[in-house]
Length: 288
Ligand SMILES: [Mn+2]
Image (cartoon, rainbow, N blue to C red; front, side):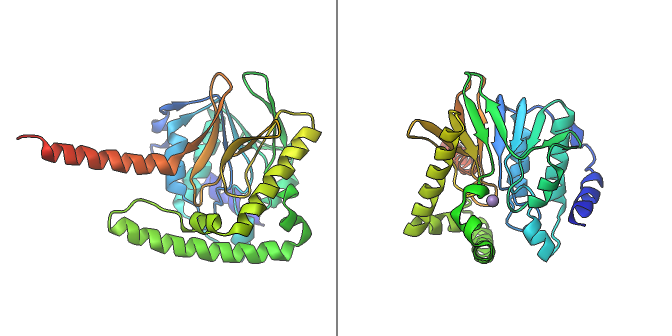
């Protein structure tokens, strides 16, 4: 039912001239994005579209919670920008980029289609990626190693509603900020960093994934799920989290030589605003 609706939406109305914008400024070997939460008002589809337009890669991983089935089931929300994201992803696949979709908990409906491909997008339970410098990275959304989700699904749902509420507050706050010319700022990210328990939850999650990666005999893990981008060594295992596109606007990329980097798209936007402001200020200072 949900999948039928989504497929119908995805094949409908591609915006005119959509094919014209190929060729971005950010060329990398691999891109990982997750936690887009398409189908919710929290999803920052416009920023994401901008990123997808700029980035060019050989392989693109969608690391789960791409479409939010939990919320779509509660109420249908599917604006044009969300459709544009799906179209953009399908177009990348069509243009020869290998797109691999590893479903998460919010899009667990897609786990029914494992090892199938949809419009050239391959759906897989998990993946082992080999970097250009020969390291093996295990790619998984990460919810299967989240204590809260595994122990009490109802608690995860409650947390989800609270989270939704914070995001709503965040949107209002930021439309106010935008009106008075202030750049985007994440309330929920701020709150999360302020809450000590959240910090231990994050580190527990990170350690659990690093342990599992070691057990599997790989050099690192790439995941999402906790909406907190990170790239660090945990006892000799590379832990990489690509963040999310509801609050932090981050992606993980692999450059041609195999080294990994977190792209902070929100920060780039903020620095664009700053340099535009600087340029204006400089122009005003310049003698006529
Ligand atoms: Mn998740």
